Length: 207
Image (tube, rainbow, N blue to C red; front, side, top):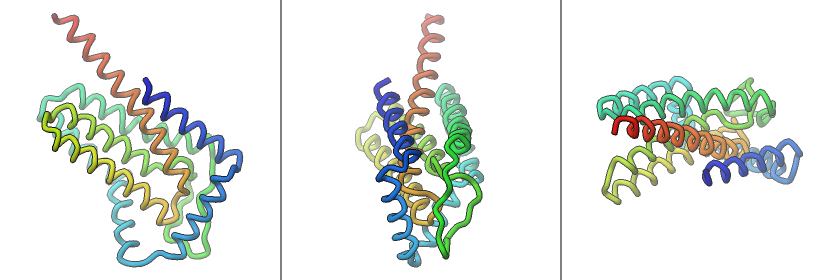
């Protein structure tokens, strides 16, 4: 509940600041144009690759791979959480995009050109939901603290890389990716809490 409230509050504050054209929007433009002016190889190609892996097609592959693993591990409740968290988070993101209708960054020589809305970032949303759920599962399923810490660090790094790639390529502003992470953490908290509650109730009935 605390995680849901905090992440929800962060998203609300970011959304208000963006829609109100507060100081963060000036920072957004400055950062976007700085990266556009300083894009270099091979970093640009690496950012393209990271974004491609976490596109809709890439997320379907990652989703199916984790779903297969959870099925083989007989982690049925985690599989159900995955089924709600990632597709549900992506649908929620699309709804939020159409609600806020923020235009994407504009450059004279863009690295990417997209016709959809900018706020919040879809790639970052999908990555946060996916890696957030993966980290939550492995922290609970693996008793060794070294594995737990390594898992959290690795998943956090992947989320940050995806977020950075979207800002670097000029597909999103900084506030877009921050809002996407906040939105996804809130949604993930709802999904995991709901599935955990369902599991406890069903196990309680069988006792």
